[in-house]
Length: 595
Image (cartoon, rainbow, N blue to C red):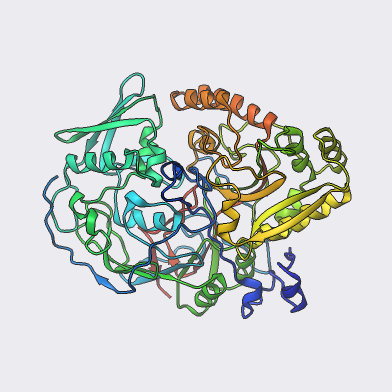
């Protein structure tokens, strides 16, 4: 289905997303920076601005890059010899069918059965900002996490279906109440310089991540962790509160050599399958294969990461063969590429990425759940999917963060089919009447899907006599409206999107603990989330999370729109890559095939 042009300017120029005026940046350019983390330095909020897949700010995935300290644009060549002082539930998204069939799925489901070609390199790019730094202990956004599994191993790792598998730890067990976990380490893991990884190194990394002043992705996953200790070839992790899913959470702690931390951008030292050859912060990164890797050896000789100015430039580079992989592609650009014989669009096997709207739930009119529910009834999600998201994804009719195919999803929740009569009735009950004005608070230039969705919602509200004023702002202005937490932004409807690992414990995390940017908190939900975290049995967890979802359904602190996915455009001769449920591209076992 042809998507609505993103602007009158593009429409006047004859641009449609379906045909893809690839030579016209007005039509294809977008700063599509999904799932980045925004941190506010030197504020009390800074240490809570943690990411767990979701977030704008508070452990949620945001749509803008964090402030990056400028560094001189110089290439650092990395020496690899140095010493250290110590030691599924498949939720595939529907794709649009064009003239050519979509080749979707994980692991590069496109080219078929060609055997891997040993060696070679691939070049990977995204339209968002490039990698600003290498330290996994400071990681705050997705583009960094595309890199980190290539360089830094963890105690555990997640596979394509978000199942936990061994990595540096070959096995683990907990005590009866899940407040202490013991990880048994492999004895053959070495750093790039050949020196052995020791248990004390892992303890140092964990203690660093759980420190109060750490604002990284890993910190939010290890909340409630009180410490770590080593004993020979084991590491013991202790917690203040029970966590039956700690092996999943700890996969987000990536191990570096402790003595490399102060010069990690210049002289990094890790244990991963690739090593750093050269790095220009926020510009380019070149990796080379670690021939002595302790795990499954990579096929490629190297992987190059490059920054492109925008998605349009990335699309052009992909079509010409200058790059091999374009990650985090906006839906309209993906649609334009689907017909290309030498390019495919890959989607995750499982996706938890969800587009949603949020409000200030502490000021009128959205302090009243009925006003929030009215927005849910006014939103035509199928039109949003077809028009704004170019047919990619599925309408999210239920207001839950747990995807519809999850074992924990509650099918009994309210389904918000478009109903303007009901929307008008609920608005009136909440004090919003004909002639009143609400404000759409979006971002100029980024997320073209949002701008189209705003127009669709504006048209619907106009039918019931309510004006929606559309304001698209610079990123800094946009975020200043609602962060730090506790700011008032009455009458605003704010778009956002994000995802996480496919476990309800972490999917609900964005609404718990007083970290939600919509100023909504429920002690009851916090209690239910804690119960779910402390419970191992899946059926018991499902009952707990069903109760949590019923509470969210009644309160409607957010309004879901479209269940989407991180899309990756890949040249057909590249295989072996896949995307995690949280949207992170996995490249460790990518390879080229014969022409």
